[in-house]
Length: 167
Image 1: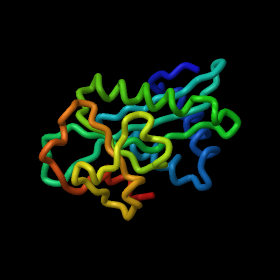
Image 2 (image 1 turned 90 degrees about the horizontal axis):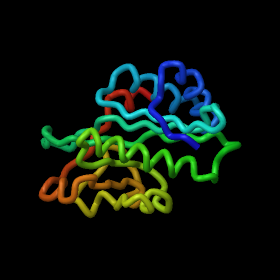
Image 3 (image 1 turned 45 degrees about the vertical axis):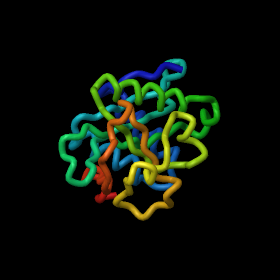
Image 4 (image 1 turned 90 degrees about the vertical axis):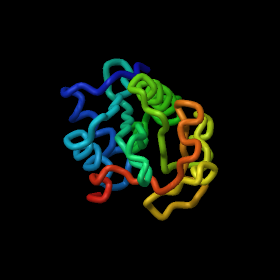
């Protein structure tokens, strides 16, 4: 599997991956909206034998009044059902986090499976005094500092890009 930046000609395949991986078109629509509106954006595809089989997206988030922070939210991540449980999602998470580091992002937030994301270093956001704007179980909203100590002394509510509120 090759993890690489999404290219314009990947957009139809990326949409199909998100449509196949989720029960509704909401995530595919969210990807389209974020691609059009959010900056910076990390959008990677997972490719196997020339076919796009996975996709991951990172978009800007904010933390309360701490407007100078460089934070991203991981969402969504999708892998074609026929290619799940083969390490494609994990490879996309690792590649995406590396791209975020290269952009100088200090931390990444995710609302996801509490048994999955800790393997990448994500910890419950409550350890940092951080919560989500969404009503989510505390163990499912997690944060990963890409720069050690980046969130020290900072707390508040993480807000995702406004496109999330349209889905």
